[in-house]
Length: 287
Image (cartoon, rainbow, N blue to C red; front, side, top):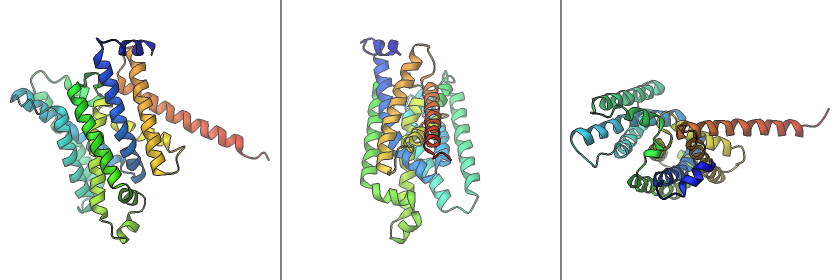
């Protein structure tokens, strides 16, 4: 880990500082929106959105290489596809009479398949598949940081504006509907916020590991939080610590930063659960 902090102060290693900033920026929305995702129990929907994004990233990369559309970067394709898939899944959940889990599973698979087809047909870009799936935080560019920062500002601003309605939708949607709240509108807003957060996290840990980073910091923070606001704050801090530690620990032995971060998150969660159980057993009265 000392090698990482030595390298990050070196002017020639600017990519490390960019990677560190990318992880910190993603952690803000991860902690805030992840708290809603876990509370509302829509993790499976977030997973479907995450995997659909591969289709948009593959299509954008194809247009960039084949048609020289320089604006069609993978992150732009990810944003467009994430929002579209969130609205589609939201409509299916609220309106369609088909089995919800079947339709969401189909959207999940079709999005992945489209992405693989586009990547396969893009000249010289088949290697991008692994970076999309498992993250490429070291490849984040300075221009991408501004997009990540803009998404962060948008997400935090929307959550601040609609904190109480989203709180009602997550904890008791029927009561919120009786109070005259447009529950369906706020539910779709929550899915769109989840979609944008998924885009932020893909650059850090990739599509496959998004759900772990979206839920594990919140699960850890939930052991010490009794209010949603405190849960969000603790989740952001924990996610920042995990992404920074994962990046630092992976640098020396040249391990994948995304996978290292998730292993740390999983270990931290198990350690917290084990420590809490031990403390509870010690506090039980002796018979």
